[in-house]
Image 1 (spheres, rainbow, N blue to C red):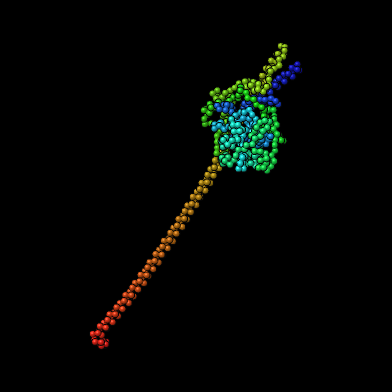
Image 2: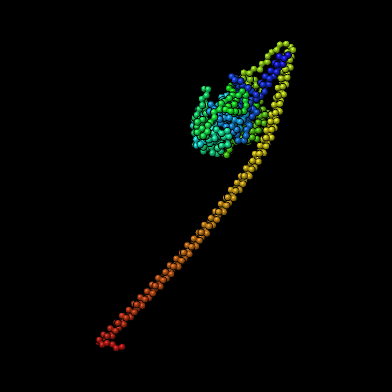
Length: 484
């Protein structure tokens, strides 16, 4: 009987471990299927079917989320620059697969099977380092070419001296300056080869040390055996990074039809762009998307619900874990075994019920948190509007003061012009008076000279006449002098 109890306890523990979501374990030498991504990331976001890329994942994140920028930093390892994320799902979305920005759903992650320290491409120049997520279907070789186009809003730039800071997010360049910095930078072509694999390494350790003027630590990658948040202690980066095998039957438990949802909700975009902030995220619309996917009564035209048992069997099949129960002979033993099975089913159902209640509580907490966040956003928006209004008023006051100063300047210029004109006219009048006086004087002098000349001429004429008369008298008197 004690052996049976031991067997029962062992069997229950095995079943709870297999059927407990989010507790997958990988031992050394084993592998998982990509079903792991669907199961482990579901609590942190929404799976959406994209006609081009298949099942993509939309994370539940902050308003200004950007991959390889928000809640994380760069650390140097044997693989090159490795992204250390603070998100509990960072072990998957920043080291497998690719990111792309959709004009409706925003940033979405496309699963992949190959691990890397980070799936990004790098730029350097003008005192800055820059990096951007590699888009789906782009190989490492293509990403090094100048013909590879990366949208401006994919890039994140920071001054070179802060690249190894854990709070590097405080030094990111504003989005509106990205285009000018791109024009002054070039692609970094550094690769790291490790265990017969090639990775994009980004800036080299020696180069970073030269720019930062301090030593750069090289961390060890330490594998953990279950999905968890990446942690760093001493000189180790502890990260879950199993070998992933593709499974054709793997799929999310619930997935949104991306095209159908967009048609039903054309004005409720989750992603958008802003000149100052770059890509932005609408939490309210993202929450509606998540509620649509997790509804107790999902719309079959928008939400596809896949059978959990089918997914679990596929996942377990790829892990190589078998849940076959050992057979026990005897009617009494079989009766006991059926009783154990019923108890196990009840325990599993109870656990699932607790999980559902926990999810509901989490949703309520999320809604309350969302309400508080929206209220805070509204308050911040009101403050921003008030500040903008104050700035506008101050700007208007400055503009009015400038207009007043301009009017004063124009009045002063006009007064100066009037005074100058008056002085000019007065000078003209004075000059004219002087000229007239001079002309009058010249005329008077001329008239005096003329009169004097006339008088002189008249005197001369009279004298001449008188002389002629005397001469005439002398001739008539025979030469006798005439007595007077």
